[in-house]
Length: 501
Ligand code: URA
Image 1: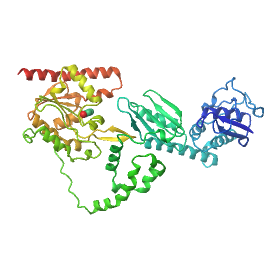
Image 2 (image 1 turned 60 degrees about the vertical axis):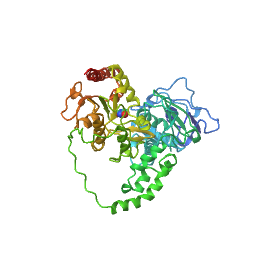
Image 3 (image 1 turned 180 degrees about the vertical axis):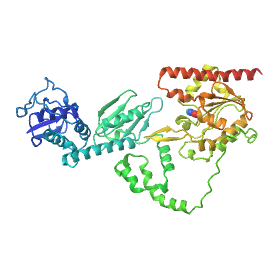
Image 4 (image 1 turned 45 degrees about the vertical axis):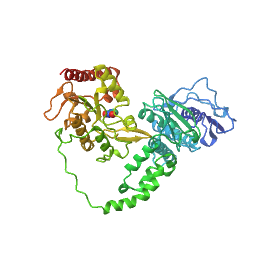
């Protein structure tokens, strides 16, 4: 009997080396036992590597002369070769992550049989092939579930915050799933803790440490309530298909999902709500609004900014208020000559209740200072006054507002405009340009000069500061930032002229 001990549950290279040597030494699968270091009493030595080559797959690695050899019953046969189909290697790399303790043996059995029948992988009904394919499928499903159901919680506060999640994978998939999170959440530091293995991202690389107990993970954070509000607000009782939902979100994942506590009451309430929706009288569809809307100065005059702010706090004219923390109204002197308009509040603005206080705001502040514009003398606002986002894990990812949302919110911009009566409006980005000019307006074709308007103040169109933050290339960033500052210098010149007049 040959006892093989692998370094870890996911030690594919160790399994491959040992399997290669065993096959070439003619050791049948019934004569091999496989264990993982730490899972057994330390009775057996690790096997050495043999030498068989394979054409299409990484089994072709030459044996290392420094490796200890197998016990004599399985001495390697150095000159023999054995071609392993790439399809097997691919399957083996995935199936080895399965939690079934027999997986190493199953893989070896198939490898062993492949030597006699190289076409085996094409026999879709072969029980060994079927079993390993099912195992690989289970791994892919588990990976998918991990991507969908990891929920990060924030530890500490910006700029030192870290996001930590607890997850209990069914199989050994942490290393497999981690690159997805590194890509998706590249700009935050995170850890995913599991009982098997923990993954940590520092912004540059993923590191792995041994598994920990659930008590090591945070159980709630400041976003918990926001997340639950969001979940409840997107839950549509008319679309509820309990069976499909449970297939997609099996109950075993519920214990680590903050929103799971809501699922049962929401399902129970769904039937009542659906009946109410059916019983309610049909509402006539809203008349489509004209795309181009004149800027109304006189219509709302008489408001004070404070009164507007109070009214906007209760605005329910689109659904964006539901998951948002609060309305983020404009800010600045009530007689500002310049009004800066952004798209919508971001995560930081939503929490602070003030426009442009997060990373885009810092970029804006820097550019304004460089252009010679005093932000405190401008009125800063957004085309849309609620944060639109989707939760990704526990993070709130910004979503671009759509045209109905921009139109629903335009009343507030109009009323700010009518109250402040600025001489110049700066529309930063496509959403702001659409709201300010009343139609979709390409930025590049319209930036860099003041646009005269018959029905309102002059308008300057420029890019949104967060566009600069997103540029991946340092040269492009610098170039575009300089263009942005140049646009804002037009504002400075305008202010100078206005004050001189
Ligand atoms: N982006 C915006 O458009 N507005 C803000 O207030 C913050 C970020």
